[in-house]
Image (cartoon, rainbow, N blue to C red; front, side, top):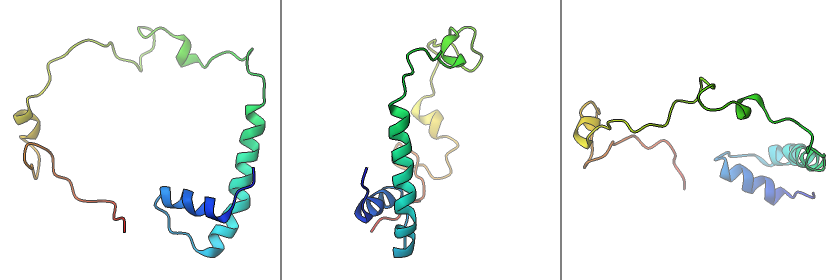
Amino acid sequence: MALTEKDVRYVSDLAHLELTEEEVKKFLPQIDSILDYMQKLNELDTTHVEPMAQVTYPAAENPSVRSDVPRKTFTQEEALSNAPDPGSDCFKVPQVIEKE
């Protein structure tokens, strides 16, 4: 797969990373190499590979999966009762991503 510097910049923009020209040139062959390796892995025959363990257990035997039963939910008032800065019927949080 022939990656371009434009592709690297696009991916870095999606990740909200600001890369210098040197970093773009540095990461281009690395990302290209990773994608080539992934393509090789996609060509492998995995038909006889057993699924991972957590997939084979029924939900009752797997302690990481809780039973899916209806439970009482909070009212909106209860949910917002401890919010430090409740908005108009919602949680207000500070902005963490600034995009120009």
